[in-house]
Amino acid sequence: HLPLRPGTNVAVVTAMAHVIVTEGLVDEAFIRERCDWDEFQHYAEFVSQDRHSPETMQPLTGVPAADLRAAARLYATGGNGAIYYGLGVTEHSQGSTTVMGIANLAMLTGNVGREGVGVNPLRGQNNVQGSCDMGSFPHELPGYRHVKLPDVRKIFETAWGVEIDPEPGLRIPNMLDAAVEGTFKGLYCQGEDILQSDPDTHHVAAGLKAMECVIVHDLFLNETANYAHVFLPGSSFLEKEGTFTNAERRINRVRRVMAPLNGFEDWEVTQALANAMGANWTYTHASQIMDEIAATTPTFEGVSFALLEEKGSVQWPCNEAAPEGTPTMHVDHFVSGKGHFIVTEYLPTDEKSGPRFPLLLTTGRILSQYNVGAQTRRTANVVWHPEDVLEIHPHDAETRGVNQGDWVRLASRSGETTLRATLTDRVAPGVVYTTFHHPATQANVVTTDFSDWATNCPEYKVTAVQVSPSNGPSDWQECYNEQAERARRILPAAE
Image 1: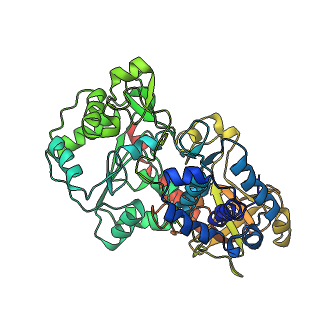
Image 2: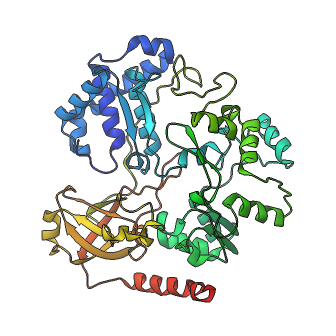
Image 3: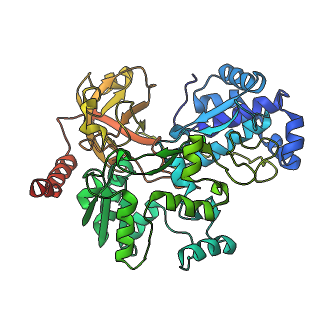
């Protein structure tokens, strides 16, 4: 475990590469066979510069140079080396750059293409991988194929009987920007609570208020539903047929064990809405949707419910070349051809601490609460985590007159909220931490709208803040809670 200041992941990964290259720990045979050699030489020249050494980076990252050198040597020489990363890597303005740097480390050391190695993302939820596989990105169709490619569009235009716009759509932050500007009119939000989970809550609320039609399709009246014009009740995983695909590309069957309380599985609700707008969809079972996926997406060509019943699960690609799936990727060669080394220049985030906001806030989740807590807050799990609290180092608390359990004001350039303080040395001096499970706190009213340069993934991990004593909930929190109570007047009416 190495201490690491928020926002400096790229610097640490590049410093590790510096050690591996300058100490001659690279797997040259692997690189010559599998990677672009000219790109490697250019990258090696870049990371070999003294400015990327662990000693130079230590004041920036907070990681002791000797420890970082030891970690780099262990990864390069210790046999199989697997890198696992989660949202602590991706939720930065340079999240994509860090992932590229991680891929560089794997290729430098030949830790690709066999069991026990590789670059392995840990997804934030159980079907994030499956959602991405099916074209949830606004610039891609299923199978990670860009919407601008005419031959790809033709496949789906033939299957769906419609013309597909070659221009990519909008990501959520762009949708909200456009809504405030008046050019984005409506949103169908299924299984996500963007008001609580997305950054800069004021901006999210403004975008939702500006839209002419907001449809929320979910298990519960979540916080986004407070701004909905229409609410469609969803079904849980116990009430529907389908598949989840996990982080190792493993496609698992989801089997219905009880009838949906609302009378419909989620796909049936979506189909009914589509047909009301003239789509004429005719699916009668989730297996038919999987059959269409197999017919249009090469990596899923061999997947069917029958195969999943027989095998239990398979890992894509699953097609004629790999009829039982592909447990390990990139065994003999990279799927896309030669491996590419990418220069990973560290650029500090635009969000900076200073005299007015001297601390850095990083946010995250806790085991007993799932994501924004829309499900788990309605269970006895609240015994373990009844409220969001601010973890602050005793030194920072003392200089601010804050004691254990005190109400504190947490303020940033974006907004402010109040919550109780917990004094702990689990966070470093200068850093504070909180979760975002409870809408009464709305931690994301504080976070900024900065995001990753490639994916627009919000930068939840670096927000400049100030902490000061408080008497209780802020005016904004009280107004928000009143608005939420008014929005939920549908409940007693429904009962």
